[in-house]
Amino acid sequence: MPTEYGEFDGAGQELTMSVLNWYCCLNGIAGTYKAGGYNITYTYNWGAGAIPEGARMELLAALEKLVLEKYYTVITTSEYSATLLGAKFTQFSEDYNIFMGFGGFRYMIVNYKDGAWQDFVGATNGGNLTDFYKAEN
Image 1 (cartoon, rainbow, N blue to C red):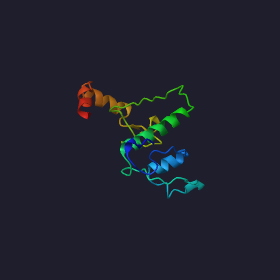
Image 2: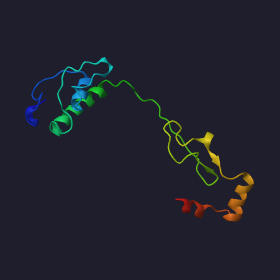
Image 3: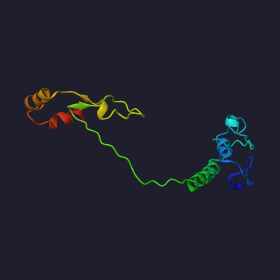
């Protein structure tokens, strides 16, 4: 780390550590991190406020570069989904669930049976739902 950022533990030294060690130093937990049988060799406290932010950003950029250079996945496809929303149907939940989304077709609720839907569209709204949808948004 160049000394242009000031004097702090490790400044101006060339250090070689595992990515986990760098992570622990940048989060100020290197002296206490013992989970998973990892041995943290260096115990620098480079957490927020402990060293200049410019130095932290340079270290984070170097770690990001390392990770991106080792990333072997090439995306070949994308996944999209579509939903059907309207007066006749509503989602099972208004809250997004990370495992189910909003429920999809399987959990969609039908608000009107066919006859009731015909009455709602024709008799109640004169065959035009434009005003109904404008009121909902």
